[in-house]
Image 1 (cartoon, protein in one colour):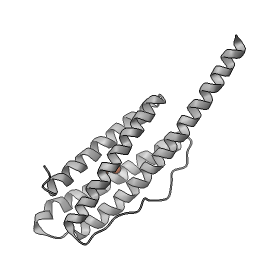
Image 2: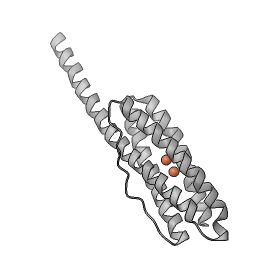
Image 3: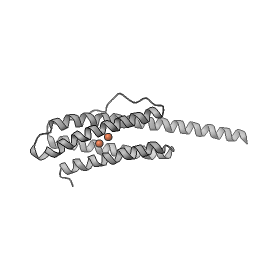
Image 4: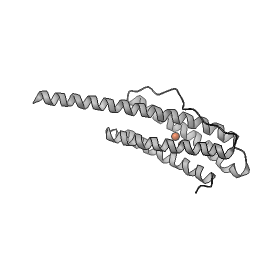
Length: 156
Ligand SMILES: [Fe+2]
Ligand SMILES: [Fe+2]
């Protein structure tokens, strides 16, 4: 009986460590997306042209610093789980056309939100509730970013 119990515990350990590896892998993808967002917002906020985009340029500067805070938090979570935070960014998009730039940002935010939703599910399945709470705070800001961009594009 004790033998079966031991092997059950060992299985659980293997399962939880492979869950953790999956979460770390996913969080590193998220971190790479945060770097990408920082780059896009730094560049876009300083190059956006057109009076109709005056307000959003200021909002994009705020987004840039929020994305940096997200990157710092995600990197901290990766380190806490025993992983190595990536130094690589996802490829940042760029367009000379202001509307296209905003559309690129919107698409990035939507992909980011999709991925954080999946990460929250993974964290909760693995019993990593502190992580899922941290990710919920981040995703709330990403949703605000999406709304700002949709407003600027007249999509709401
Ligand atoms: Fe972010
Ligand atoms: Fe964002």
